[in-house]
Length: 198
Image (cartoon, rainbow, N blue to C red; front, top):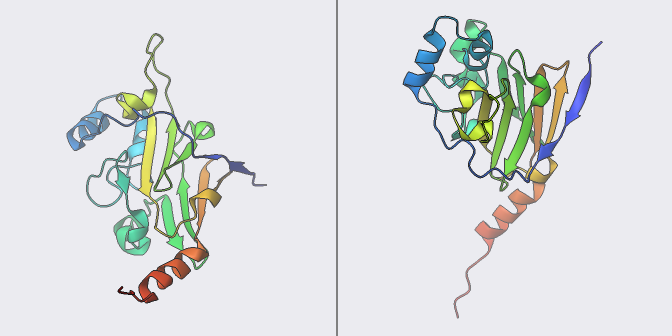
């Protein structure tokens, strides 16, 4: 029997200093090649994971916002799908944008979803606790040692006030971003409205 819980989508994140340290490609390669690197790091940043810096065919820091819905998932994930390595999918209908992803091995219960200024959606989760005495938020230092993130640009017609997120069986994340039906009407009015000269 499957279980599905609705997750809270927050719009009031008060952490302005988060993701201020970028993950660089050489750092990721060094971490993944280290003897005894945690298995969770391989699940979070491994091939096919939503949180992998290499998901889109070349290195892209997951803490930078990516315009996911500008790309067709069939095209962008073609090679990963053929090798059976992808754990993410996205598509859109006339009513909504949908993102589905398998979450990394641990830390599933602490996933957070934030929408920043109606333009960026951020999915993150802390896997490992910082050592005692560290006062900084885990997201404002070398965040990749403690958790994962993927920041995505929202489409212009997204209704960010009505985003819904669900977690099925503690591992499958589904995010539904409704399309604002008024967006297209407003756009058509701007295009068709004649300019009146005085």
